[in-house]
Image (tube, rainbow over all chains, first blue to last red; front, side, top):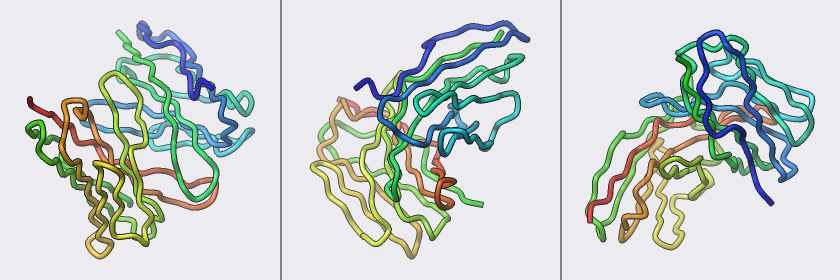
Length: 113
Length: 113
């Protein structure tokens, strides 16, 4: 049981390049999330998927797209990377029910130059 | 809108107690959470409290909830250097599949030997 896995762990992009961050969970969770974490800004929700087949915008969706490929996988795409997207990106999934425990992946450290 | 506030830094000596405070705004939150983030890692659930409770104790951790003042605190007894991390307070917001966590900015705890 690996929990939530993310690839890659590190990435450097040039402005204007595109890339996809991959996330997978093996806990049979319905809901999955993408966050970015920046110094002094805490965690900000980019997109989430409440269940397979649905995605919704979070607090800071501009410049990103997501795909909920199946119940296990939720990817985040940067179509044209900008320096403002330099951040640490975390994927998370959560248990069903009232208790709202989120399980986080180890993060992807992205630098856009 | 919903907001969660916490102080950004706390420094304690090894063996002392640490108290991390948090205020939140959504009085309908059913659960409140404390997550821990160690350097270079994702967040992990540390403990949580249901909104109809005043206190929860779990080994060295004590969570106190004052619903009237919308104030949550986390006390770590006998703080160790391994407790050095960022601690995030979070409240639940929304309903059903669209329930989300609202995060504080995190309190960075430094434990000095």
